[in-house]
Length: 278
Image: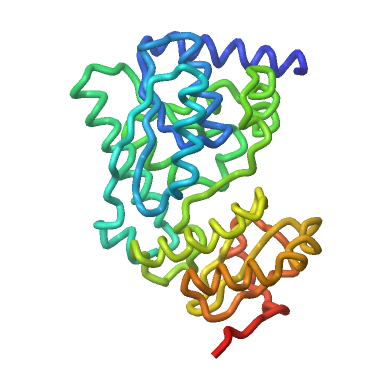
């Protein structure tokens, strides 16, 4: 780890130690895992990793998050959230994340007040400021702190720190909520999210680590890193059959490869579409 990264880690430790007790919004991703690990290191049982459970959070991610918390010896709790009941969230406008994060953070704030926790923290880092405006706004409105951001820690720093702390998630690909697979304006429903989750489970079971199944009505647009496109072709039949069984009529392999936030970018016409058997 570089000297400046070590200094940032020391600052992160100091920030969390000064909280005295903290609830951490924890998804199992590397960012929140670093916050949980340092909180456990500095505060022990005065920290609690809180995993928000809803249809937008894949069950495989929940299992991994719990396994990581147990490995760290960190206390954790499953928190049911109900953003899907909010028509503002379900409408899936461009500010959907504000209502989703607002629901989670209001739940954690209520828990903190009821049980006497001094702070609520998230895993937002310095590189998130431009891309996560609505989530950060919801955090600030609910008094949630971002210790990684306060310590000026970037994504690269997060991964370096995670590796130093021996977290197996240090190189884990970023994983956004399932609602991010749905184009703005298409209503979010539990059934739709379950369909996407089942489709993505097919890719996970085949050993792919970074992927998205973008929902376009009866078309599933599969994004994986460009260097793995040839491998996807090798598994063409398994991918096709599995995703069709999840409820899609067509399966398109996006030749542009994996692109975080691609639904907010100009859409490309899928070039590889396979028709379901009739």
